[in-house]
Structures are given as structure tokens and as C-alpha cells.
Length: 495
Image 1 (cartoon, one colour):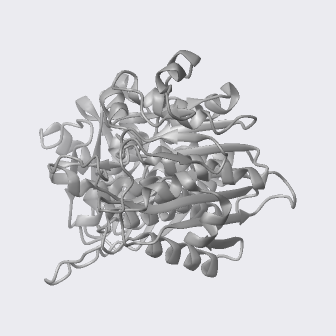
Image 2: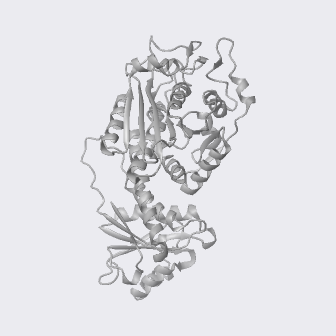
Image 3: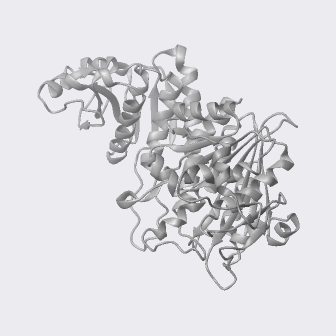
């Protein structure tokens, strides 16, 4: 798919499909009015005739227009003028993308990004168009035996800027959107694959392939003997019940100044989580293939950086494993020693994400990172607290937290800050080790973060709990690609 920024106006443009916006009560946007004049008032007659109300997300394809600026026009409802904002714009862009991919157009000229949106600048208006088209175009890796569906014909999307003064910002938005889309697609592909395909070794293979595709990436994979030499007893305790060997995957992106401290991204990579001896309930257990979305998202983020050539240094650290029950599996009550030397009493083997993350967080110290961000589908408690709309954010550094919150707002991939406090640490006390790996039901998302907090002394650290935002259940089951847009936006803001 090719995305091109243009500064041409509607009446001079010739395209297979022109995409224009209409607010409720038949209010045509300026470019829609210009196109309407070129079509002899046809769009006005459609709106006045009651065939299109302009409700948010509504679309109507007007085909067979013959000679003129467009072979067909796609009308997109923008909703009430008073409610026109970032959310309404993204909704309109996604609706337009879905309708475009269903029609027979090979190229399209999109005028939505040329119209003002409160608190959304030309860069984000263009970027959101690319993300919307890419989201609508995405297809889950197809392992079905039947005939594959035909790919959409749409090949070129031309995004019209408001004027030449913002053409550079529009081009930048398209480039960044395409990179984010590429990273999100990788994340979704990995997360959507079944656990018998996407194993820890498979994740390592993908990471090595990324390094072959991009010269700015370098990958190293550590196997179990090396993890034992490093003293990663907490990580290895999770893998004892499975036949799949664990891997610690390290991918470095070097796009910034040589020697500059990198941003470290740590992604939870449990490719299937049965709960171990603390076995999960069967309903919904198939969704535990998504428990490696943290890993997939940090790999997708580094791919986006490499596609862009972003001027920043970053490193992704992925502890990858399975959590399975067997006669060799770790048992509730066992005590393990982490890479940091701290001991942990494992009261619940289903609280395994924090056990692999803590050793990975310790490992990041060797890179002397500017900041560390871990990303994990960590707790059901976060889903209860925030639902599927926002990721949970906890941090020991308010500047870092503010940067991530702002990036989430800009990228329309929001997170919500939850507290960290010593009072919650008290719940992790143990009679037999330095602390336990669980602390009861109350404040479960926060106490999970407090566990990780014990391993990041002296580091600027943030934790993103994406358990509610990483994937959808039900009829639309599948990965969302979040929080790649948030992470890329934050990293770009540091440049």
C-alpha cells in the first residue's frame, strides 16, 4: 500500500474514489462542497433527499459518476459539528477505510485530513488515516484450509493536505503512520498465531529475521544454559513444567548518537500460560496465547523505529517461555532466587509474568538505560479496573509517567496512571523469603507492579499493564496491536 501527500483541491483531482466528509444536518465540508460544484450539485441532492444523514461513522458510496474529478465518491459521516473531535475523526477515518477496501477503487484521494479537527494537527490527521487504512486492511494469519479471500484492489491512497504550508507535516504523518502500521501488524501477527506455532524459539527466529532485514537492529538470543549462568532463577522457575526451552531475546536498535543511553523496553513473552500448577479455569484458556503480547509489542515497536530510521537508541529484552503443569513444574510454596539475588516465595504459579519480568528488568542494567518500560498482559485485576479502553500505567518517575500519558493521548492509545505506594508493598511480605509473588485480590494490578518495583532501584521505570487492551474477545477475537502506537509516539517525542 502506497500513501502519498498532496496539496491539490477536489475539483482539480481525478481519482477512482474521492473521500469527503459530511456533518449531520447535511453540512458538507469545504472540499466536499468544491467536489459537489464539480459534480453539478449531485452530493447536495443526495443529502437533501435524505439518503445520507452524516451520522458519525456512516458511509455512502456514490458510484458511476463518469467523466469528471472522480469515478466514485465516498461520503463519510462526521457526526454533529459540536462533537467533532479526535475520537470522532478517528472513527470517521476507520469507517472510510473499511468502505474503501470493499469497493473496486485502485486509488483513492482522501480529503478528511484537510479539514480542521480540534486539538489534532495536520501531522496526526495524516497519521491516523494511514493507521486506519492499515487496521482495516489487516488480516489475521490464515491457517484455514479453504480458498483464501482476494486482497483488496486499493493500492494507492492520496491524502490531501489543507495547504502547502502543512504539506511537510502531512508527509511526516504518513511516513510515521506507515511505520507504526508495520510494527502493529508484526505485533498482531505474532499474538494471533496459535501457541503451537508461536513458541519461544519462534519468537527468537522472528527477532533474528528482523536483524537481517534492518541494519540498525542487532539480535542476540540466550538459551537456558546462559540463563542459569546469569542466575535467572525466577525466570527459569516458570519454565520447569514445559518441554519448550526458554529464550531471552535481546534486540538492540542503534539509530541515535553512539554511546547515548538507550530506552529499554521489556516485553512479557509467555507464549502460552496454563497457570502452571495453579491451573486456570478452562473457559477462555485459549486466549492465553495472547500472553506474549508484551513481547510482540516491543518487537513491533523496534521494527517501527527501524523502518523510520528514528534518531534514538533502544533495546528490547524479551523473556520468552511457556507456563505449563507437569511433575517438574514449580509448586506453590517453592522459594526461588532471582538474578538480583532477592528470594521469592511463589504462592501462585499463575502469577508468572512478574517472575520472568523481574530477571529481565535486572538484565537491562547492563545497558545503562535512560529509562526502562516494561509491557505485559500482567493482571486480570487491571481489566477489572480499566476495562478494554486504557492500559494501566505505574511508574517510579513522574516525568516518565507524564510522557507516556501524553503519548497515549496523542496516539489515541491511552493509558491511565495508577498509584505506587509503600502501603501496597506490605501486602507482599513472606515468612519464608524476601517477599511473595502475590498479595491477595485487593489492588492486584498495583501489587503486581509493586513486585516489579523491588527490582528497579536507581532506574527510571514505568510499567504498562496491557491485559485489557492487548486483544479482543468474542466474535472479534484477536490482537489489537496496542500499545505500539503509544510506545512509538513516546520514543519519537524523545527525539
